Length: 227
Length: 131
Image (cartoon, rainbow over all chains, first blue to last red; front, side, top):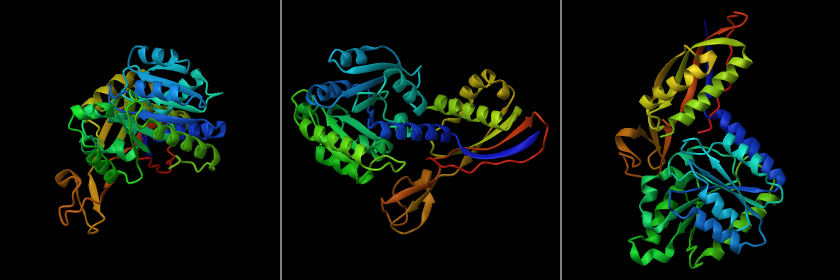
């Protein structure tokens, strides 16, 4: 038996697949957004609001869950293209699963595709899905200390959306403190406090997404995410 | 936290390597795992034992795990320290501007294998680091 030195990162193959998907989406002019958060943070509610508000932007949604199709059904009811992905017990989406889901749903005719990742603040942050942008949600009831507990996801995300701001008066959530903690981990992170229920703060988030879409289409491909 | 996903990728990489290098049997796999990579070795071995019989080339291969110690670099004073002992704050100058130098890895260091032609040639890949 011979010894073969590999020195190969276990996730190298996933990284290559992610890079290929990113390049393909760049050419197609479609911005794939990896949306990450804990369960119950309001991902689907936020997406529903974005679909309703951003009428000129054609949005598709890939809903990743361990079971059920409740989220995809909610999105489809709004007239947007959606697909439900079952991860087969896995706690995150990887680039292979994302590429397969996208093949199934089809991105032609779309501007923005959201990959609603499995509700979890840990594993999704570690896997490159091939998305052109990473967006994370932290909801007010979860608490402003989450950047201290789950630093990686805050470091990895391009933007942080603080949802359920209409409930701020019921919780001890300090937006300034949360902002300071997140910025300490990732000085470039953009922060948008919103309420998908009342519409507060939604316009700023929508302008930000439109800006990122334009940049994704106009800037030359650099083999990495648009920062 | 996501041992199953990592083992899945590991099995895929090994299958591809076997195909590329025309290997018939992989006798052992040595994996280097960073101290703070979040991989629970007990779960990892359970997942490995679950996937192993599903890939003929891996059917009787042994998993060897090596730990890479976690070391943090401090921008404040330019020193390094043990991550697990001190965490994010530098024990020398109390700065929070610190970065993980090593300890987050999951690298296939080497494999022992038999090839179709029985050649003893050594081959290696470029080290890729996507962490």
